[in-house]
Length: 332
Image (tube, rainbow, N blue to C red; front, top):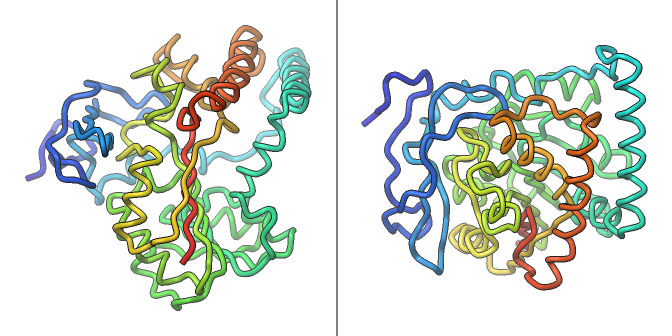
């Protein structure tokens, strides 16, 4: 039964774990959308089974209304190239960005970031690639420049139109299961920070499995609910992102999803490559309860972010599951 009628985004109760069926226990209550201002207050529950530990929204936005949470999403933003900034802020931001690039290089973090941005396909012979939830299309354009035949999928009409207008890349509009794409078509399918937005992730992975060629690769990246950052920031952790992140995963729960989708050659790990992005957002949320647009002119925030990124990378040496993002790699 649809509940919470006072909210503009309608919801349904979701008491039990999607993966194992256990009844969820309260984790966080009354969270706002700190990033893009979608209406409503949101609760998260966690599976009590230590072999699972899935986190999800209860109540959960219904599929018919979830688009309301994306009306001011980042994929709708036009590039301004700093035109609205004054000269002092622009110079300060450029200086801090260069400082961070140098830090990342000398700390050995640059290579990690490049591998993640290429979805760990940087050493793979180019073939035909599909990106699920391709967003602004920048990653597809990069793959195309490196010899891949690329296509995208989006449910956001505005984002899909912008990708085609900017890069000329074909983007299929609609849910994957409704597109009637030809089976065994793609050498690789990539899913970057999308699976946490999906109401039925097992069904999505099943569809991807059908679309992959034999020995084709699927790579998915998603926030890691067992990360060092979540342990530190708790309800202010940037990776929570209610109400868009319907479920939050760990290495273990991602493996279980892949198994339920029929994959058998499964590998999963965590990375701290983008710990700076998550830390920057988390520090801002903890300080103001809002994310807004993070300004590099905040020197204290920049320094905190750099140190967090460094220590997150070092903590992986002690706990390989502590990275801010989980990576799932499966072979058909």
